[in-house]
Amino acid sequence: MVKWVKEVQKGSSQDKPVSADIIQIDFFQATHDCVLKMNKLLTSLFALAVASVTAVSVQAQEVKGDAKAAEQKIAMCIGCHGIKGYQASFPAVYKVPMISGQGAKYIANALNAYKTGERKHPTMRSVALGLTPQDVADVSAYYELHGNTLPAPDQIAPAPAKVAELLTKGGCAGCHGANYSKPTTPDFPRIAGQHKDYLYMALKSYKEDGSSTWGRSNAVMGGVAKQYTLAELKMIADYLGSQQGELKVVPQSKFR
Image 1 (cartoon, rainbow, N blue to C red):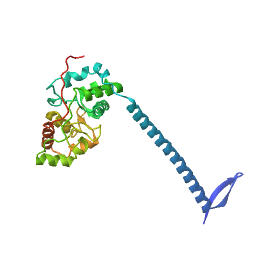
Image 2: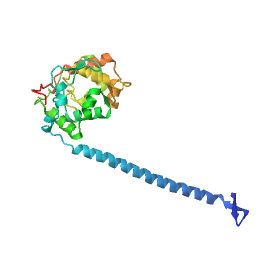
Image 3: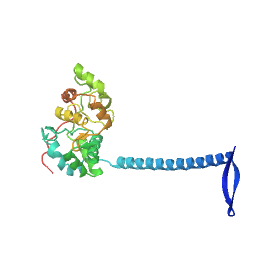
Image 4: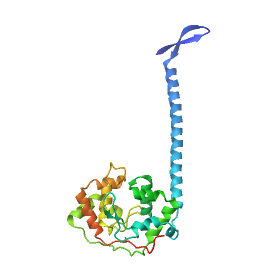
């Protein structure tokens, strides 16, 4: 097959035959070169992304918590978490969570989630925004060790049939441990013995999508919580809150 193209030479024009095979080869060569350049660009961008994530991860790992140093940094914490029976009033009335004996990694994750807006709560966001990464690490380490918490029992009371069914449906023990006090990774919280009303509000918050001031955006917990009705969430919270765990409120002798 011959394709005719017009070529201008010395002010005059003439028709000159050009092989379609040559045109096809030139086209594929140009396409090949373009693909090579695109692959090189994508490889560079991927390497940059990996390097950035690695740098952030390394930086986070380098922040070691100092529980002793945190004694001068917890003034904003003890005003709520250091008073037995203290209740929050937004978005409803419920006891603030017990954090003495909670895992340091989970506390740090929670504080950082309030910073980023993954967790929405005006008071906690303002507290978290005032903390440096070192402050977060120190406070988290402090509360993990606070109160010389005794280990939770390996076995807890069997759940009623309906509650057991709900817990199995959500795969709760797969993250929080068989006794709900020994999480399978430090990222997850200890929840056995936590205040029942707080557990209910926490679970309910994962179902909240539309509020700009309250709710939690977590893909895993959101997917779990949205399987249940509010009545079912309350049943789960009541059972878990009635079990013996490692969490407690340790009254502070004074505000620093």
